[in-house]
Image 1 (tube, rainbow, N blue to C red):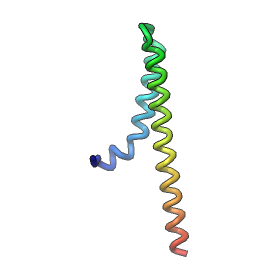
Image 2 (cartoon, rainbow, N blue to C red):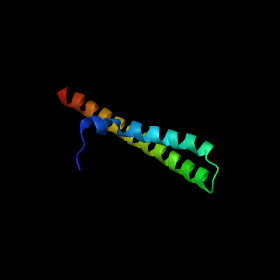
Image 3 (spheres, helix red, strand yellow):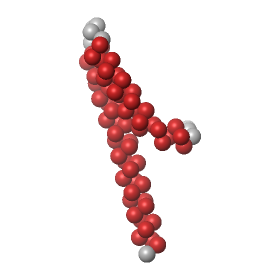
Image 4 (cartoon, rainbow, N blue to C red):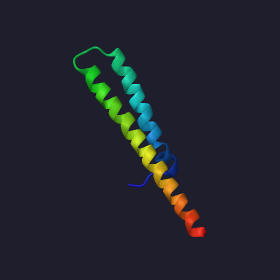
Amino acid sequence: MWISKTYYESLPYGYMAVGFVVLVASLYLRQWYWPEILTVLGIACLTGGLVIWLKRRDYRRSRSRRNVEDQV
């Protein structure tokens, strides 16, 4: 599956935004097990977005460092 570069680049931020919204929603819902479910889901989304963002950043840094070393 291919998605446009705009959506691909904004994906980690979208995951983190959804995680934040879900965590805030877990503060307001008090029925059944929804607060616990939403808390776990929110933390998972925040963690997933952060991991994707960090992995992309590290890959881009190593790739740019490799390009500089190749030019020297």
